[in-house]
Image (cartoon, rainbow, N blue to C red; front, side, top):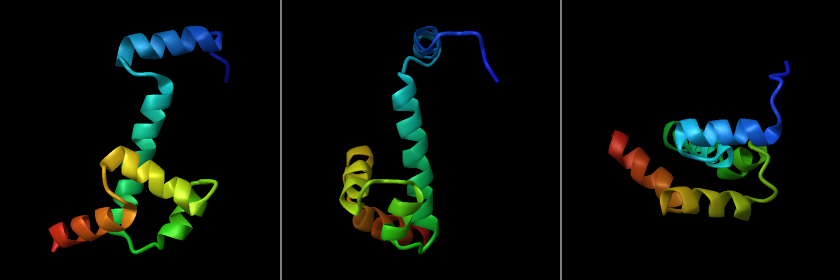
Length: 84
């Protein structure tokens, strides 16, 4: 489906309305999705990185650390401990 907008106009509209770039919104959505998977499932991190199309496990680790301040292993350990 086409909106009849250029990429630039759509980007400006998103930035105006949400006060964030489309890339920031997508990264936050992805981070929330991954944090949920890390804290509520026992899916191996290597499988998560492949499932979400990261180029490597180290790229996945860097993304999680950038978004949460913790490595995926540490994040999972803390969140799993919190749920008990």
